[in-house]
Amino acid sequence: MIDTVLAALRCPVCHEPLHQTEGSLRCPRGHSFDRARQGYVHLGAGRKLPEGDTTEMVAARSAFLQAGHYQLVRTTVAGFVPSSAALIADAGAGTGYYLAGALDAAPEAAGIALDVAKPALRRAARVHPRAEAVLADVWAGLPLADGCLDVLLNVFAPRNGAEFRRVLRPTGLLVVVTPLPQHLAELRQRYGLLDVDPDKAGRLAATLSEFTLVEAEELTFALQLTPDEVRALVGMGPNAFHSAAPDADAAADTDTTAPAVATVTVTAAVRVAAYAPTPPR
Ligand SMILES: C[S@@+](CC[C@H](N)C(=O)[O-])C[C@H]1O[C@@H](n2cnc3c(N)ncnc32)[C@H](O)[C@@H]1O
Ligand SMILES: [Zn+2]
Image (cartoon, rainbow, N blue to C red; front, side, top):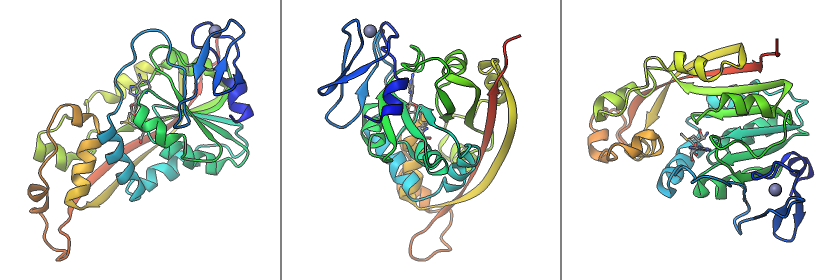
């Protein structure tokens, strides 16, 4: 395991530092945590873990991201990362796509992908030579030392403001990506998918009351998607829990200008925002 990461990890039961023994991590009180064959460490102790994304959802997201459709989001996130960062984590990292981009922007940094979904962690464990993957529930408290992170990413994933504040250095930065109301509007209309909460901005501010906004960028761009990609996009989001994936032919029939593969145009609209921990009064 990467030294910088090991030094930052804490026992999820007693919060003592961890050391490495064969195939597992141990704290001085004898709590022991296995490293899975697929490379991630299981630090999800305590109450029952939330479900996280399924294998199908993770595979869909991985294919979609690898096709480069959200490259602009990744570049914008990475643009907020100081090149001097030493430790970067991603809460709800999924496959680690954004964490890898952030690590490329900080040549000395090590990274920690945190997620509850094992299918995602298997991929995140291999996403970058300077990254480790850790199974942890953001609601249960993160298995990280106080003030250990220079940057924490949170991309389309649950937020625990108080924990995020605890694990960031006072000079650290939280980079959050959230969908804007018009995000994927065409698919929402067509398939009756869940709308983005119109008060998302208000809820975001409420969950991040320990932080001060430093800078925000709103990105709106067009995605040209094949029917398979439409299916992947619907299958990879929270909608996958609520609706059947659309059938590919129905998706293809709106735009037949490209003779080989019919594509549909879908609007992506997201907000990338950087926050600093608010100093205590
Ligand atoms: C919409 S996905 C985004 C993944 C990744 N950030 C991306 O954009 O590619 C949300 C992620 O949050 C994870 N997640 C859900 N609940 C979680 C929790 N309580 N703790 C940690 N991760 C969680 C899911 O397993 C999933 O990987
Ligand atoms: Zn312990």
